[in-house]
Image (tube, rainbow, N blue to C red; front, side):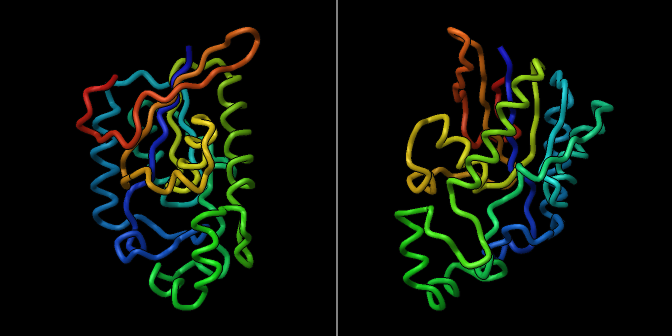
Length: 205
């Protein structure tokens, strides 16, 4: 059996302001840096075989702090990036509702409605799940990966076999982590979820 610890990056200023970041490369805030330090301390007692991250700074820096304790390199992969939100990036939810009301409310029920310059939910889910399959094929026992809220929800929806549009109700805090295991049955890889949005004071290990 293999285990994936899927971490949402630490807080940024845009997170605090409620702005859609998408693929804008926004750095960690002071609070985010403190969250990262707490994560690094928490995972210091874990046995990690590999550390992956989105190539966006907020995720890569979160992963780097954790990997450094284990003397592991961070393997960055753009497939772990957040959704590209196109013209929504940099805007708050209230601003999006005002400027793009039909698009906003349409995406609430159909994540595959395309935002100009952005990605659909199916596109994000496909790239993220392809990464997961490849990571699972490496036969590591425990892998940690740092990604983004939307991308993590897309992966969880794939494993749960539910519509991505329904998973926006899953709370994923900055610095929270979800735990996925995999094993092979009848020559097929089976994924299971053991925890969603765990915190650094969680007793699961």
